[in-house]
Length: 145
Image (cartoon, rainbow, N blue to C red):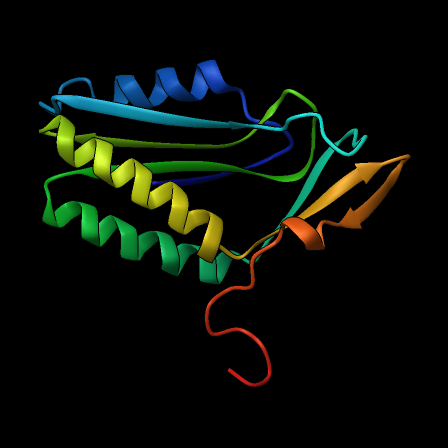
């Protein structure tokens, strides 16, 4: 389940909703990860653009991997502006066994940072500036790929 929101994420509500939606699913582990915009380089926040068709494909591939292990992955991400100390990203894995959830959340978050088609901009002095130095090229992208 992939959820996209405009602006910052309401972490307590999302985590509670996810927990309640899986409460009777007999999972032994629920491992959430919450990403928060931190203060660095004098930014006021971050802004995000998302290319949804590729993100949906990427996420569905991860759901298929999780299903093979009897697990479920959920993810929420922000579109647009997210200010300092607010959340822009939440991921969670539900699985029958803790080891599966622990391994999947680590692999999922790392692959998200490397592969998800989400572009990050710094919000600084009322302007939106592409965060090139903190961006990763998507595998297979570019003219000569």
